[in-house]
Length: 60
Image (cartoon, rainbow, N blue to C red; front, side, top):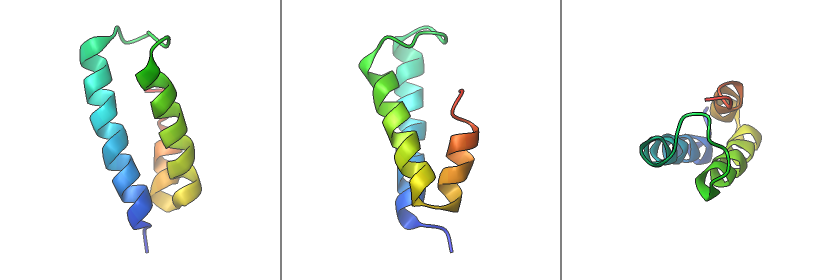
């Protein structure tokens, strides 16, 4: 069974990525949202199988 926490964090990651893409250039990594995304990806990866999918796409 997939972790509900991992699913919710994955949905949050998607939202933050969308907001971030509207605010900063694609290769920009000097913003607070970038740091938040990195931390959310770590949490999702630790939460379960869905998190592993997030970890695999962490370069986006």
